[in-house]
Length: 306
Image (cartoon, rainbow, N blue to C red; front, side, top):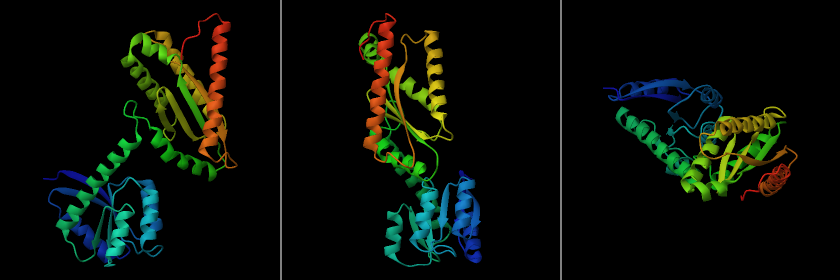
C-alpha cells in the first residue's frame, strides 16, 4: 500500500547512475516517488525555481560545479527542501561538512540499496520538518503568529540585501495600537489579546506576502519590505486604515481597533544599520501619535491613556 507520494529532484550528471537511482526509488513498497532528473547545477536551480520538491538527491560533482560549492548553491535557492547528498567521494570530512551545511544525510554511491535510500529520504524529510518547526518556534510570536524580535533581527538582513541588489525602495513601518491600555484596563487582558491577534491578522491580509511582519512586544508591530513601485506602501497603509475603519463602524467587537504608524523609506544608498532605521521609524511614529492626539484634543475628544 502506498502511503505517500514524494516529488524528488535527482541531481546526477551520469545517466546510468541516475537510471539506477530512479529504479531504486520505484522499488519502495510503501512510498511513491515522482522524480525530475537534472545533470547540471544551472538546470537544477532552474527546476527548483519553477517547481516544488519534497526532497533533493544531490551529486556534489557536476559539470558546472563541484564539491561543497554545489551544496551551498542549492541550499541558497531552496533552503526549505531537505537534501540527501549522493557522492562517489568516500570522505568522512566532506560528509560531516555537508551535514553541517544543512544536508540531512550523506550516502556513498554503490554503498546503498533501495531500502536504505528509501529510509534515508523519509528520515531526511522528517528531520528537516522538525528542524524547521524548532526554528519557527524560536522566531515566531506565540500569540499572533507573526515573527518576534529574534525573528526580526534574523530576517531583516534579507530585506536589506534585496534593496541593495535592486533600484527599488525599502520601507520600514512601526505601529502601535491606540488606546490599547484602555482595552486591557476596561475589558480585560483576554480582550487585549484579541485586539493584538486581530491587528496581526489584518496586517497579514493587507501587506504583500513577502513583507516581514513582526510583533516586537506589547502592542508594538513592524512591517518591513521592498516596494514593487514607489508609493506602494502608501497604498497599503491606506488600505489598512480603510479596513480598520470598516471594522470599527460595525461596532460588533466592543472595542475600537486603531493604530499609529511611523514610516520611513530607504534605498541602496542607505541608511544601512538597523539601529538607524528603527530610530528614524520610531521618531516618525512618535510624531504621528502626537499629531493624532492633538487632532483629538482639538476636536474636543478626551485624551485616552496609551
